[in-house]
Each structure stands twice: as structure tokens, then as C-alpha cells.
Length: 361
Image (cartoon, rainbow, N blue to C red; front, side, top):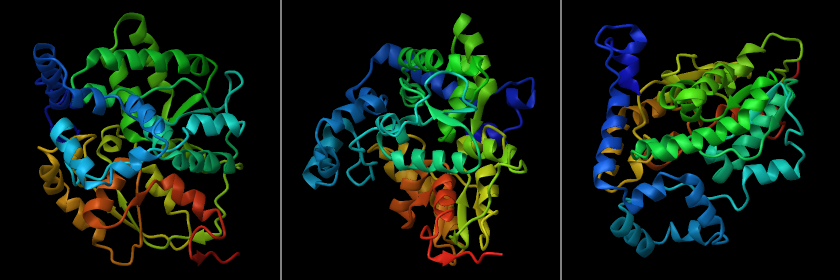
């Protein structure tokens, strides 16, 4: 998406050439797959919910096997997944299951905020979703979860599967629209998913679905974007008990493409003792690009400037990014996992969240 951000000839800039290179690439992929058909890898990597469902049935064995060399050799040969690529672990229980058990589900439409947790938080790292709810509630937001959400469709689109993308989009519209019609904002944890709901659904759907998608898009907010909008209200609480100190922050490409600023980064500055080293370069992960055997090394090369940038502030022992896959990429190639800003904020509200205490005024 960075070519769209930086190119002057795009529809976004109102140029007569109207070059939308990212969408052109997706269109080419879709046409190619119509002719050639989908591979097993397309089906597995293009449907994170399916992959996670199968992994949960293994009772943790999938996570163990993903670290076994002979199994990774087989994945390389059978699926084209690079044997050295770090893969996200699967959670034993979904975020939605936790939300139901914890009484966080919306009983009916009308909450101030409903959370689009994204398939990564749903299947791989529910703690990010828990941290996000904690921060929203700390700042007086009535935030609720909803059942039945599925992947935003970006992985399917990446693999040329427009039919699956549109099916997933319609499912999400069916779940979210009653809440949007009741006035709720849809707060999205992952920038890629926010971009899909806000920008791509209205372009990729047709007829009545397109009109519904436009209404949904107007209600979509990034987590930091929403919290920033209420930062000066009386209900906002910015009293922190511990501090991460200096932070290296990576700006996700799909957050940049939405032109909403880096409000998660800006909120971190409210924590005493925080200084920010901002890194704008692409990390090179790009969905499943970093996982594939033929593009793993290219991914590392593309991300080299970002890796160096995150390391530039030697005092920054905490790294941040809204993109969880970028976090994994930094862990593998730069030696430190980047945390979601909501996780850092949630920990800073706790006395034992970070080693550095915040002195009370």
C-alpha cells in the first residue's frame, strides 16, 4: 500500500491517470487464479479462521509441530511455507469464547463501541483484545464484543479469491450493521482489517451490499483514532502507574494508507517518561508474503531499513506497532517483538506493568 501513499498519480490524489497499483495487482491475481485454479496453499493461507479451527482441534500440537524441523520441511515441500519463517501461535480458546465467558458480549445493539477484534486476535493472540477492552473501559467507553465475525477477507483477496472475500464481507456486514444502525462505532484493532472495512468493502461489493458497506465504513475507527477523539473529555483517564520509557514505534503501511495519523503512537506520549523513535519504512511482512518459501528472503531484504530503524534508539527496550504480523517480523529479524500500543497502555495503567514506576503528583 505504500506505493499508493507515495505515488502522485492515484485516484486518492485526484489525478487523471487514476493509477491504483495495489488494486491492479489484486485484480491480476484474481484473473490468474480464475484461469489456473487455487492451490492448497492458497486455501490454507487465504482462510485464517479455517487454519485456526483445525489447529485448535490438535490441542496445542500444531504449535509444537510448527517448531519441529522435519514438520517444517514437509510444510515447505507441500505448502511452500518457508521452514525458517516464524509463524504465529494459535490460542487454545478464541477471543470470542473469552468475551462470552467474561460477560463482554453485546446483549443488544446500542453500545458506544463494538469491537472488530480481527482474526489474529480471535485466533492467535486474544490478550491484545483484552488489553484493548481494558483501555477503552478505563477511559469510560461502553465497549462490547459481538459474535459471528469472520476474517476481514484480506488474506483471501491476497490470494485472488474474490468470492471468499465477498462472502466474508457479507457475513461481517450482517453482524455489524444492526450495531452501526443503532449508532455504535466499530473499533478495529488491526490496521489491515480497518482498511478493508473502511476502504475496500465499498469498492469490492455491489448493489445493496455496497450501500451497507458505505455505512459501515463511516463508523469504522482505528483503536488509537477513537481514543484520541475522546482524549480531552472528562471521562478520559491518563493516570499511569508504570512506564516503558523510550519506545521505538513502527507505523504500519495499512495505517498510513488510511490517512488517519498515528494516534496509537501519540497516546503513548501521555505516559510519563516515554519518548518515541518513529520508523516509517515497510517491515516486509505483507500478510503471508514473509511466510512463503519463494519470498521469505525478499521479505527480509525489504524490511532491512525498518529493522535498522527500530534498533536506532538503543535506549528503547519496548517496541510498538499496531500490526501484529509486523511484531512477529521484528522479533524474527531484529530480535525484539513489537507490542500493540493498546497492550503498552494497558500495562502502563498497572503498577507492575513495567519496571519503571511513575511517581504520583
